[in-house]
Length: 143
Picture 1: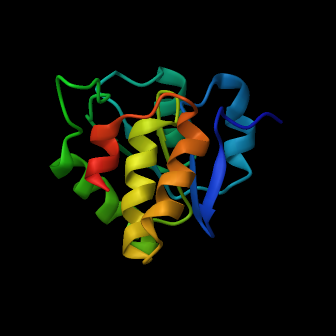
Picture 2 (picture 1 turned 180 degrees about the vertical axis):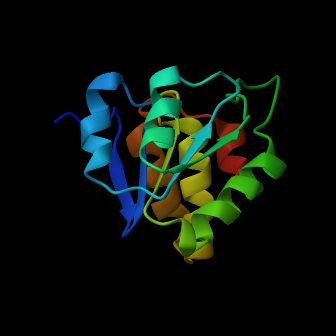
Picture 3 (picture 1 turned 135 degrees about the vertical axis):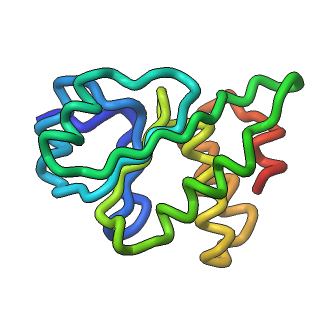
């Protein structure tokens, strides 16, 4: 059983990762997910969409482009719509993922942490743990 890249528990019933591969779908089955959120302007893998259908999982796709400074900022309206779904406990257990599970997911998790009254230093530290050396300042401005 193989978890998706950058998989982690955000809090009880809330998970984050990069885009799952076919090899990680058995792992996702063990989570008994109710909802999957995909944050990307790209089309998802057919296997992931089929997994959601086969397992009666609500699949939500928010078309958020990767933030490639200085040319664009993350779509805050789409991010807010996704965050509303994450905050609704009726959607839990929930998995949110982007292509690599770094920047876009880091933004939505950072917004969640702000609502949980985490310090900005702790929010930025968590963001950096998943983004590695590639940190987008515009992403941190969202937080």
